[in-house]
Each structure stands twice: as structure tokens, then as C-alpha cells.
Length: 278
Image (cartoon, rainbow, N blue to C red; front, side):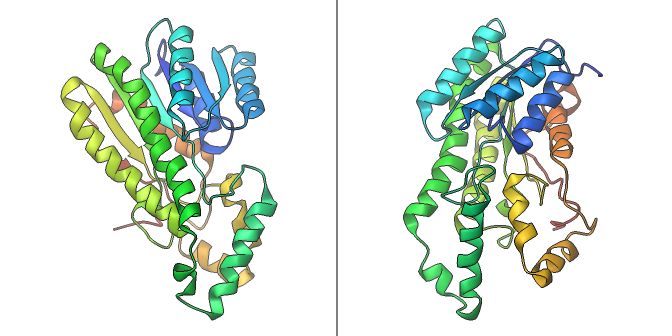
């Protein structure tokens, strides 16, 4: 423990699983009190209990990321937990497709089967894309991110400080790194990050993004079901020849939340094993 975030308070959406969970545990290890929300209430509560079992302070709430009311409730709980301060926000809540539910492999299998059906009919997957399903992904990934940012911003603006960390993706810049709705939403999250950095920077609030590559979480478990040739192509596209670990993303988040990144704003870090090199 280096206590880089000692005495600080962090809000983490999507904190019950994957990258969000890793961030919650890492922030707590570094001394921060953590308020985490997740659509899976039991997962959020379990992570909070894990933090407390390690001697930290945390709370977990059910948060539907796409609703402003739930984000406001999480911020209010964080203020109670931290005595009126919030120093960092990590927006880790996200879905890869409209029916995504962390741990539900069956839903991912259906998406994969649908994608494979189009291999012999190139182009028709774009024509047949369900706009309502795209809208759902955007509601969670983009609108949910903005809700969380707007919920914490008044606290940070009043304090004249704070660090907002959005979780984008290499899909923000690379069209082959996810389904259509996902790539659209993550590109928009990156633009939101840059715009918010411009708008909030003069008041002392920093806004940066992390654009993970293929990280070993429930969201990428579907890659294990790829045909052998496609799975090999995926690994060949990553110079380091492996998926990343959620802890490696959490390390980036700690850096962006702490003093070591004090002159960073409007930036995106790509822990992706070299997948995106342009």
C-alpha cells in the first residue's frame, strides 16, 4: 500500500464486476473511501464488503447507469460516506450489446451466433442492425457516463478540484474492436471526455479517459467461443499476445485520480498490449 489516494473519496459506476471492481479494490488499497454502484446490487454490495474486510471504507448501491436519479443517489451516498467530498469518479459501467448482463454467457452466445450468420452475407449485418438495440447501448455507455459526470461535477466545481476518469475503449478509435453500437458509444465517450475537459478544466476539474484493449473480464469471455481461426487472429492483433488484466486498468485509474497526473486533462491512455498504435 502506497496510500496515493489517502483520505480521498471515489465514486465508481459499474463497480460490481470487471474493471469497475478492480478499480474499487485498488482505490481502497490506496487509501480512498469508495462508493460503488452496479446494476447488480448483490455484486456491488459484495465488493463493498470485500473492501471493508480489508480495512477500507465502502458502500455499494444498485445503480442503473442510464438513469440520472440513480447516479444522483450514488453521489449523495458518497457525500455521506466521505464527509461532503468527492475527489474522483470512474465511469466503468458499460455493456457490449443491448442484452448484455455480466456473467450471462447465453446472451453473448446468441450475439456471436448472429454475427457468424453474416459471414457469408457481408454488409447485411449493417442493414439489419436494430436501432433500438444500438440506442440501449448508447444509453448505458454514453448517456450513463454523462449522467455520472454531471452528478459529481457540482461537488468538484465547488471544491475547485477533482478527477473524472471515463472508461472508453480502443473501440473509440478502432472500428473493428466491437459491435456497431459499442464502437459508436465508446467513440462518443471519448469525445465527451475531451469536451468536458475543456469545459471543466478552468474550474480545476480534470477529465481523462482510459481506452482498454481486450481485458480478461466477463465482457470478453465471448472471445473464448470464437472459432479457432478468429481467436488466433485476435491474439495476433495484440503485439503482447495476451489479454490484459482488470488490475492493469485499475492501475491507470489510480494514476489519473492521483497527484502524479496533475497536468493531465483531455487525454486518453490505451492499456491495450499494443493493439492500437496509431
